[in-house]
Every structure is written in structure tokens, then in C-alpha cells.
Length: 331
Image 1 (cartoon, rainbow, N blue to C red):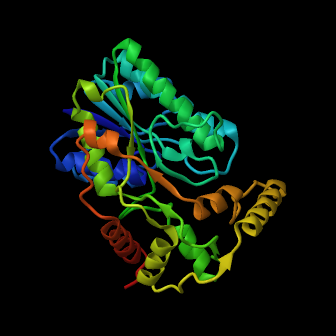
Image 2: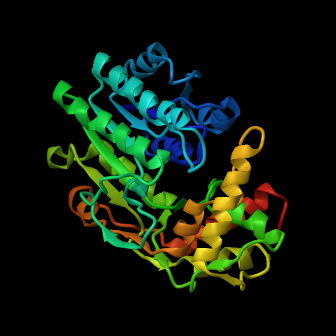
């Protein structure tokens, strides 16, 4: 099988492209940073540079491949709607159109469980429990992108969407690095009682789920799948585990959610007034994410993708910490 992996210069896309090469697939990659895919090219991947915002490039990327794993997109909770729309909806439209015009058989789309997020605790969320209103630009545009993907079924494209939660492992540059930098300055506080449970996903387990989606049988098609380790853990226990591994002070201070939310609102207001609108160090969404329960029901993935998480969360965290220390010359 010959596949295209978009977003291959990023964490998830890069890790999956490498995994696919190790499984013997022919892999074409696209990404924003050429230096981010050098290790894949050395392993035999074909790299075609360019912006997926260019519909003609997206079509050219799809030529001669059997399947596309679409990992590219805009991430985060801060920024303008038009930027999220461009990065998630327009890019996905172009990939879908390229797949249809070039007769690609299957599209596996990387989505997000952020579409479920309401700012309040939610446990064992199923794929059909999507709120009527979306919490932020990211959630809305990821949902709209999914709709573009599922709409392509009427043109004969086989589609699946995966919604992985808090993916971590070597290469993760989004979940813990920001917290580590803040804690190095003593600026992190536990929000709430510190007992809120959340799901994490080892990147190894996500790789297996993406690979299974490439070969899944007909009954699995046309559906979205929650992906996690199926092992909810207290978020602040995980944060402090990473802090210990990184030889940083434990987070021991507590802050009420109401006070933290107010501080987040003030921080956002200041950043909106600042030239360039920099990302706030504390936002209202971050406060809600760090103080609420958020877990997923992964029974659909178990049933249709034969998804069986094989790497536990602690092993994924150890892998992240070892990688980070090696990258930054720490022991």
C-alpha cells in the first residue's frame, strides 16, 4: 500500500509516517518544515513540500496513493477564527477534493475530542455526544472539517475519523513543555481539588489505531472513533510525575477555579490589547481543561478497529521525558 501522510513535520504525523515505513508501507509525506521530515526521507519516504492551502498541490500529493492519513491542521485555543478555518476546514476540503479527483480509496482523518468540550466535567463521552454549541474556534473548525470528510462518502471515498485525547510520547511538544517552563519559574498552581481525571493516549497506541483504520473492513467506515489509553488518571498526578522526572519542583499550590478563571480572563484581555495578540500564559479554556474531568468511551474503537491499547500512560510519559532530556542536554 502507498499512502500520503499530511502534517508529517509535526508530532503525530511524523510519528505515524515513521511507523508506517517500519510496517513496510510506501509513504509520501507533506509538512510545513523540510527539516522536520528529514528523518523520514532518510528512512525512504518521499517528501513533496508545499502548502495544502493550494488545492492543486493537494491534488498532486494525492496522485498515485491508495490512502491518505490527514494529520495536518491548526491546533490550540488562541487565535483568530479565520486562521483556524483556513488550517482545519480549507486544508481538509483541499485534501478531500484531491482524494476524490485522484481516485484515492480511503481517507483517515485525524480529528479531536475537543469538539465535545463544554468547559464542564464530562465522563465516558461517546462519539455521538457532540454539543449543540462548540466551546472555541478550534472545536468548531475541527467539527466542520469532519463534516467535509464524511460528506465525501457520497463520492465513493472510504472515510474514518479518529479523535485521540492528549497524545504523548517522544516528540510531544504541546502538552507538558509549556507547564514545565512555567513551573521552572514557580508559576503553576493546581486548579480545584487536584482530583480531576482525564484520558491520555500513548502515541504508540494512536499509531496502531491509525494503521488499523487504513485496513479496517467496510463496517468500520463512515464513523468517528474516540482514541485514548482507556486508563483515566488524575491530571495533577500526571503533571507532578513529569515534574519529578524532569527534576522540577512539585506543584503544591492550590488555586480556586473561580479565581483562576478570572485571572485567565484578565490575561486574555491584556493579550488582545498587546501588539500581535500573543498567546496568554493563562486562559479561561486552560483553566477549565486543567480543573475538570474529561474521559472518553473507546468501546466503538475496540469493536470496529480492534483497538487494544498496548502501551500504558506511564511508559508514554517516560518516553517523553527521556526524549526531552536528550533534546535539551539533560540527564
